[in-house]
Amino acid sequence: MQGKFITLEGIEGSGKSTNLDVIMEYLNQHKVECKLTREPGGGPLGPNLRSILLDKDKSISPSVEMLLMMADRKDHVDSLISPNLNQGKWVISDRYLDSTFAYQGGGRKMDMQIIDNLSKQLDLPSPDLTLLFDLPVDIALSRAKERSELDRFEKEPLHFHQRIRDAYLFLADKNKERFRIVDSSKTMTEVSQQVISFLNEFLND
Ligand code: TYD
Image (cartoon, rainbow, N blue to C red):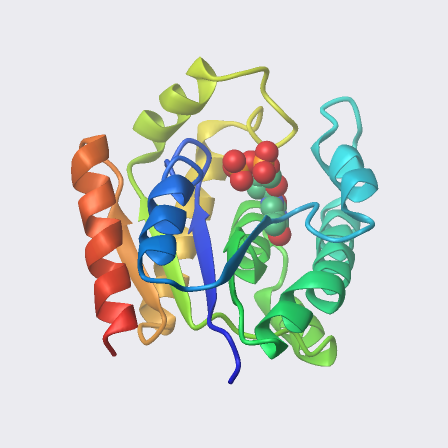
C-alpha cells in the first residue's frame, strides 16, 4: 500500500519546523514508518540548489527562482518522495509545491497557472494532508528575526510576506479536502494540540 504524504507550509517564523518534532513523535507512537524531509534541498542536488536559492548576495529573477525550486522538487520527488511512498512509508516534508504557489506565485507575482501546468507536466504527487501554520505577518516576522541571520526571502519587506500569507489562505480555501489551518498565533502548547488533533482526525479517517 502507498504511504501517506504530509506537507507543512507557512510563512517565515510560522512555527512549522518547531512542530516537526511533535509530528514525528506522534507518528512514531502510532507505529507509522515515516521519512522526514524538507524543501528546498531534499534531493541529491539539494545542497547545491539550496545554497544558490537562499544566498542573500545573489540576485535571481522570479522565473529562474521558480524553475530552480521546481528542479529541486523534481529531483526530491524522484529520488526520495516517490520511492518511499511506493514502499508504503509515510513522507513528511517541511515545504513542498504550495510553497512555490505562495512564494513565487503570491510573493513574486508569477502566474500560478504556469506553476500548475509545470507541476502537472512533471507529474508531481499531491499531498494527502497539508498543515498550514498561519498567523499575522508582523508577529511571524518578529519571531523569524530573533533566530539567525536573515536569508534572501526573510530580507523581503512586510508586504511581500503578506502576499504569501494571502496566497496560502487562498490555496487552503481552494483545496479544503487536504488543507488544515493551524492557528500559530497561540501558545506553543496550544499549537501542538491543534497539530495532534488534525493528525488524529487524519489517521482515523
Ligand atoms: P528555509 O531555511 O528552509 O526556511 P523555512 O524554515 O522558512 O522553511 O528556507 C526556505 C525558503 O525558501 C523559505 O523562505 C521559503 C522559500 N521557498 C520558496 O520561495 N519556494 C519554494 O518552492 C520553496 C520550497 C521554498
